[in-house]
Every structure is written in C-alpha cells, then in structure tokens.
Image 1: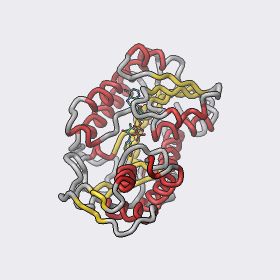
Image 2: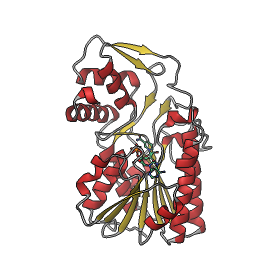
Image 3: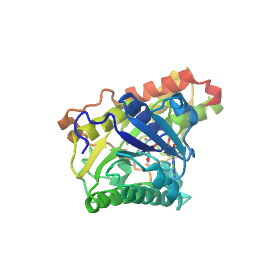
Image 4: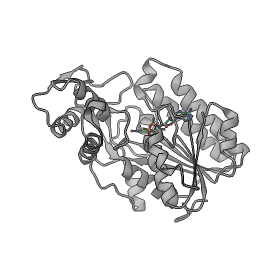
Length: 326
Ligand code: NAD
C-alpha cells in the first residue's frame, strides 16, 4: 500500500513515540505532513522529547500501555500505519528479570496486532534488532541469514514479535516492515554504552569500568540516519513482509568509544578497568555488523561510519547538558 512519496497526509500511530528513537520518528513524520498519534506509557519516554509538538493540531499524545487492550484498541481507530517502536530495549535486563521482555515486547506486540486486526489497520513498521541473529557466523550478516538463534531473552522476544508480525501479515492481509537495527545512538539517547560511560566518568573521572575485554566489535549508526533509512524503506518497498537491516558498514569497540569520550570530556590519565571475558554480560553478542546491501541496492546509503556517529553523539550529549547532571 505505501508507495513512493505516499508517507504523507496519512494517519500514523507511533507506539513508544516519546522514547529516544520514537521521538525522532515523530519529528520526521510530522514534518512530512502526517497526522501523528503517540501511544506511550512514559516508562522510559520523556515529555521533553515531544513537548514541542503539543500545540500542533496534527499531533496527539495518548499516555497508555500496550498491556491495556482497550486503550490499545481505541488508539488504533482511523489509523493507516503503525510504527511499533515501544519495547523494553534493555538487553541486559533479561538475565535478571525473565518476564519483562515477554510482557512488554511479546504480549504488547500481540495486543497491538489484535487491536490492528479489529480496527482494520493494515500496515505496521516494527523496530527489531541485530540480536535476533544471535552469534552469527557470517559478518556482515545479511537479512536472509539463518538459523536465527538469539542468545538473550531480549533477542528472543524480538524474534517472537517478528514471527507474530509476519504471520499476522500473511493471515490478515497486512503489510509489514521489519527493521533490524545495529546500535542506534544520538543526542536523545537515555541508555547504552555512551550514556553509561559518560555517567561513570562524571562520577569518577580517574577510572572507567569497561564490561568485558573492551574488544567487542559492533556497528553504530546515528539516529538521524536510522530514521532516514526507515522512511526510505517504507516508501520504497511494498511486499507483504519487508525485512531490512539498518546499520553502518563498519564497527568499533568499547575501548575506542571510551577513548573518544575521555578526549571529548577533556580528561586525561583515566585508568580503564576491564571486567574481562569476550562479552560484556550473559547474552552480549561480541561481534555484530549487519549487511545493508538490500537497502543500498535500493539507493539508501549511510553517511557516517561508526566512530563518527559515536563522536557526534558524545559531543551533543556533553554540549547540551551539564555533565554533572548526566
Ligand atoms: P526507548 O526506551 O527510548 O523507547 C521505548 C519507548 O517505549 C519509551 O518511550 C517507553 O516509554 C515506551 N514503552 C515501553 N513499554 C511500553 C508499553 N508497554 N506501552 C507503551 N509504551 C511503552 O528505547 P529506544 O532505544 O528508542 O528503542 C526504540 C525501539 O528500537 C525499541 O523497540 C528497541 O527494542 C529498538 N532497538 C533499539 C536499539 C538501540 O540501539 N537504541 C537497537 C535495536 C533495536
């Protein structure tokens, strides 16, 4: 249904639209002249990410939870397309709380799909993750890599969401876009390695704890490029199910990220203390880089390599805030 240039003048629901990535999606969709409804339980979403839109007649905020089936159903009324971004994105959490990803990723997605089915909403774009691949033996990992063997409960929950979405697409004539992200970073980031390192260095500028051996090699993409890629893919593809990796074509590691942060914070003689081992925590995938040939073949290409995205993110996080308050 969504053909080229048709991502405008439609009614779009953004679950998780007050979060880091979701709020940038909202900015972009409003700029493209859509009517946008944000549905967010504000668990990690922030009002200041979306407050600039509160007076816009094309914008509506529903503070609601995808675990609430009635609220989810009424949010889907008169919607053409859903960007389903809400989730608990904390990969590490699954090792201590085995329920959270099951509820807020799998059950929440099921509730949303049911609401869409009942309200006849036929289009869904979903933010999935590189972690569905598990420890891939082919790097860069293409979309058709298999078998998919996640090693974290988060990855498992996202893979389950993908399966629900593809099966609803087939059974109920929906269109779906599934985006498997590399690490997405940017200046509204509220979690992840960069925020973590800056917070630690603000507390203790002489030393930095780094999880693992510091050599984990992962690909990073700036959120603006990530949003570009999503808009591009939804506009340019119209299969029943459309799966895309979104990332950059290189990788960097925690030690290098720490060095960039130390440099940008103007610190010196910081001792890096490694917790050791090839992965940061149980469920951490030590090597990740996604093949993006599918998107490139259609004409999309990222501009910044991983380290440039890291540096720009660090600069904007440090520039915007008093580092003592981060
Ligand atoms: P985020 O925590 O900033 O955003 C998630 C949003 O969803 C928040 O606003 C939160 O309040 C909301 N939310 C959570 N549970 C909800 C529920 N039950 N009902 C309603 N709202 C709910 O995280 P993010 O980094 O912006 O991630 C966005 C999406 O991208 C997630 O689906 C995540 O799994 C995926 N993803 C992110 C990355 C990354 O590097 N940031 C990588 C791969 C995939």
